[in-house]
Length: 114
Picture 1 (cartoon, rainbow, N blue to C red):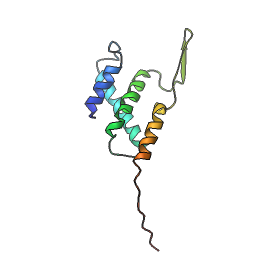
Picture 2 (cartoon, rainbow, N blue to C red):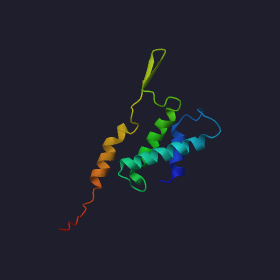
Picture 3 (cartoon, rainbow, N blue to C red):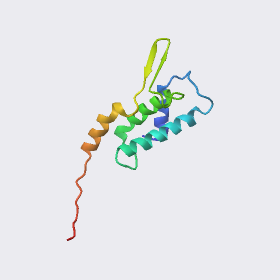
Picture 4 (tube, rainbow, N blue to C red):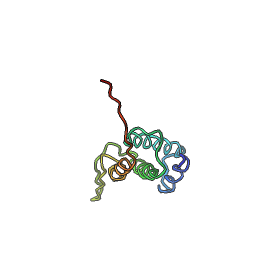
């Protein structure tokens, strides 16, 4: 999935009336880039996010967008309503990431010189 396609999906998922300024696309692009980099690390340093895992970039990007202004906050209570965030935005996707890694393990041959 292209970066533009991911950006379009993220834009559709956020509240269109919610605008953080004229540079919304730039803010979202930055978030998507950061999320993509973090996912690639979790995937063992792949060069690109596999197409079948692009939904993770979309989902985590929406989470990160919704947390703007609350970065580093674990929970917040206003008028009896409490919002709690996981410290790892990828937490709900860890099973999927692990399944992908397990399904795509490659056997590596090692040569040992004596």
